[in-house]
Image (cartoon, rainbow, N blue to C red):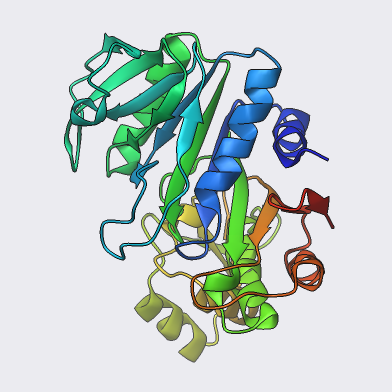
Length: 295
């Protein structure tokens, strides 16, 4: 099977045109997952855009010195990146300089003229990323793929389909890595508020200190945030919050699938066992992009 095709189908099933990949750690296959979807859209000859909330597609991780997956794009693809990262040869057409900045300088919206490997760098803020997604749609992209931040969901919105990427880099055992994916999945899929029951609506974020106060007070009302991005916590702490309080949201986010990477620089897991373990934990369709397997 082709995992990219399956992930696109999950997004189409809920009528979403933007697909954000969020990871539980570094080196869990976020960029590989995005690339698989890009390949599927290229086979369909469908115009698509690509952006990132960080820096992706470089050959080496500048902090760790480890190899990173490259981003290969064919002619016609739209993407957002720092102008400084555009290749010197005329492989791209600059469509717009939208006045946004990345950590590597001013951002451009570009279109690929000649197929090749490209580096993608986007704005660091969630608001600026949303503006870039809209610019890609405005220039003709039918679908926009977003290589999201690690264990950060501030950039996702209810209009996105969300794919969780996890892998051996997330935990020392398949079970511990699966628990990290489960915690992120539970956070992304908070239930919607029950209008028939008492609720305490929060205007801003739910912080760890507020959680402690609510638990000590024995709070039994629904604790309502706008959506899961308003929870200032990550990883397993979110799962603990959800079990200790009746945590709800005003608007749902849409986690549609999970991908797994059974290998990491420091360890590897048996692929089929890991895929099944994660699938059982997250209760979502799960895919091994490398093996083309599903659970």
